[in-house]
Every structure is written in C-alpha cells, then in structure tokens.
View 1 (cartoon, each protein chain N blue to C red):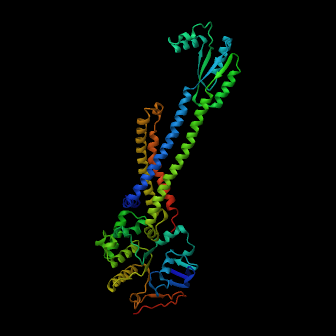
View 2: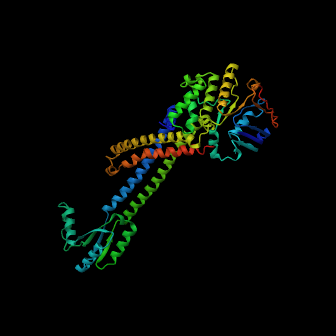
Length: 290
Length: 224
C-alpha cells in the first residue's frame, strides 16, 4: 500500500470522530442535493409524459364536403409534427356520446331531430412538437383550411404544465448546485481543521524536501474517502426516503406512485461525493508553499 | 560547498546578520559558533531556504539559492540533511517511519527504503529500537534518530543545529563521533553549536559569529 494511502487511512482513523461528522454532514448535503435533482428529473418526466396523451381536435363545418375532408386529412398526415390522425364522423360522435351517457341519461338525447354534433379529426402530435408555439402555429394554419370550423387544444393546460416543469427544473438545479457547494464546503472545513492540526508535521515534511503534492495527497485521499462514504450514506437515505414517502403518501395521491429516484442518480452519489470531497480538500489546502 | 557573500538578514527591523561572508569547502566538517541569538540558526535556515536574505548572495554547491524558483526549493532541501535543534520528529510515527520519511519524500521503493533505513539505524546504534515511538526514547536516542533521518539519503551537505544541546558529555561525544564518521565518507557538515567542547582542539574550521555585527571569523587550524 502506498505511503499516501496508508497515511490517509491512518489519519482518517486517528481523527475518526471529526471525519465521521464530516462524512455524515456531507451525506446530508448530498442527500438533499440528490432529492433536488430527483425532483428535476421527475418533473421533466411528468411534463414529457403528458404530451403523449395530448391531442388536438379539428372540428369540421356541417357543410364540409368529402373533398374538404380528404384535403384536411392529407394535409394533417403530411405534417411533420402530426403523429396520428383519426376521423370521427358526426354519426360516430353521436354514437360515442350515447354510449358515454348510457341508459340512465339517454333521455337527454330524445327529441333530437337531427345530429347536432360536428365531424372532427382527433390529432395526436409527436412528443417533441408539443410546445405552445408549434401547436398554436398548427392550429392557426388548420383554421385557414376550407371545411374547418374550429380547432381545440388545451392551451392553458399546456402552458401551465410547461411553466411548472420549467420552474421546478430551474429551482431544482439551483438547489442541487447550492447543496453540492455546501457538501464541498463541509469537506473544506473538515480538511482545514485536520490541516491545521497537522501543521507541525507538514512543516517538517516541507523542510525535508517534500513537494506540495506530497503534502496534499493524503488530504485529497481523505476528502475523497469522506465524500465517497457520505455519498453512499446519501444514496441509502434516498432509497429509504422514497420508500417511506411513497408508502405513506403514495396511497393517498396515486399520481405520486409514478415518481421514482433514478438508480443512476443514486449510483452517481458516491462518485459525486468523492469529487466534492477532493475539491473541498484541494481548496482547503490551497497552494503549499515550500 | 557553502558560500555566503555579504549576506544581511533582519527580523522586524532588527538586524541579525549584517554583511556576513564565509565559505565552507566541500568535504569539510566546520563549526558555527557564537552566543545565543547571534544568528546561528538563521544562517542554517538561510542555507536550506526556510528564510531568504535581504541582501547578499548564498551559493550552495555553486548554485545561487537567492534566485531559486519556489518549485525548486524541495529539490534543494533534498540535497541537504538537516539535524533540527528541536528534532522535529513525528511523534505518531515509529523510529523506522521517521527515518524512512526522508526516503519516501524522494520516491524510493519500499525494499530499498527498508534496507537503507535499517543500515542507517545500525550505524547510529538504534536498529533494535526501530519499532519504538520517539517518546519512548531518551534525548540522546532521539537526537540519533534525527541524525539517522538526516544522513539516510546520503546528502552532500549536512546541517546540524545544536546537535548536542541538553545532552550529557558522553552522549554528546558519541554523536560527535557519528558526525566524524559521516564526514569521513565524504559529506560536508556544518554544525551550529555553542558547546565549546565540541570544537575545541578538534582541528576543524570554526566560524565565530558576533551578535548583530559582521562576522568576526576565527579559523582554527588543525592541531597536530
């Protein structure tokens, strides 16, 4: 085992309480950072899952000719953002309505002399095109076509979902960065204390001809070990917290059962902790003057 | 090997060394003496670049160390073995580990480190105490560990700051014999001491530093 590794492990053991405290504090910071990142990932997932269910309805005028209908259908099928097009005739619309009302409310439709419902196209869009601007543009171009009466899409809903997802992403990423910086600062403070405690020994090393890196190496390793175990603890806490959260609240709000913590994020925590630990140690030691 | 040219150094405006010049030849064992506070330790610190002079030039093995780059200072120090007045032993490491440190810094492999450290400890009579911690050793034994650490890398120059301070005359004589042995192997040695018994009638060069003034150098010639 190299001298630096041996020195780092021996120092970690000698100062076990302060190192444990540093490790746990980093764990808490990384845990919260991971939750912030999980919130970003989950909000993006929810926001990106919704467009798959998003549809646009093109209502046709009562006097639309078969030629108009065919032209509209061809135009829609040739449009890149359009994933699928389904024609719903006015008869089918009425049949669907009847089925929806069932026997209990079928009397509502009694007395109708003619079918008041319009024929329509149910248009599903490709996920990447479900953006307010592109949907708006498509709706506007459809409205100009002969035979089209109106175009309906959940404008307000779409806007809100995208705004919320965007806000959660920005806040989550800012929180993640802040908490990661917090983890770096915790390691910085711990290593700074250890560095001061060993200042006599470091002075001796320098006088014996040690280079800056020879002095720094054990501290960097200590920071890396502290961050690695802090990250492991944070990963375990993430899984535990999600389990408790979902079993407790998930039952009440089924929507939340779709939430998850990505395994890659948890696996990345020890590595992120290690890098944060090394960064903190490097800043704490700074430039070692001979 | 060591050349001081009109070197001056002060602390907080108090002049400690003023226009000091002296020269130690390669392979010499020389003494630096003078009263406490005369600047003996300062001279040694100037040699291993723990301090920089305000004026003058210092040459070590022909290199002017006043213009040395920060990044080259470790390499300068690796060419010097230092016996510190306050020992500077690492109390949490064994005798072996303390001596081995000088070689680990130089990047030697473990097998060579073990062989050289044990050989050096044998030379200073401490092989049997290699696993002891410094605090379990007497003052004389600690001093010998420091000497072992200074010579284990076989440096071309050894500086010793009051190496026999607080030691009984018998132990001091033993340590002095170690220095003579090392010197006989070719190392240049400069010993700062105010212990007159060490250099009196030794036949070695003695630089007497008068406090705060230019050095009044007295060179004693070897007595036959």
